[in-house]
Length: 163
Image (cartoon, rainbow, N blue to C red; front, side, top):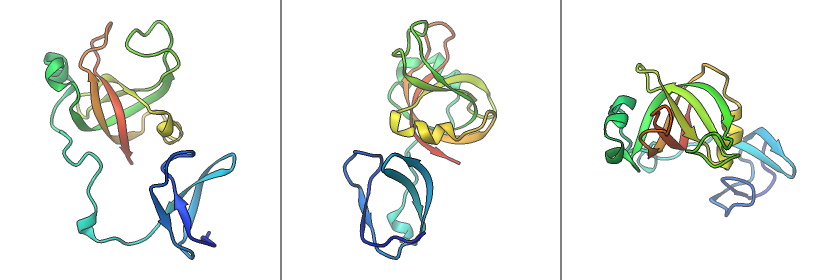
């Protein structure tokens, strides 16, 4: 598909615009939601203008490191390769979550494969719903809590997913 006119680009429906796409720019529709479509656009930018999401993220820390010193890691950004198990919805039996909150149950970081929980912001749920059980993905996430109440699993907040 090709854009007919200059179009504002939004990170999610009903959010402030984050940029524009020019007419004639090729796009691929990857999702529909009411009057909105999620698109992927291809183009070239200067390498100096790009950085990886979570570029300052820690990638060598393990879940065991976080469990051993939970306070030291709270708020830190991590880049981990995980194995996606499923997208779950919290209920009142999970004291570390708000009932109704969506979270990823995963194993990781590779090669450790401890169980971890990753809270998913509402705007990232559609992207996570496209994952299949046992998919291996890289996530950038912030440590919310180093040890969950019952199983001492780290709880993270999703920032980005890199396939």
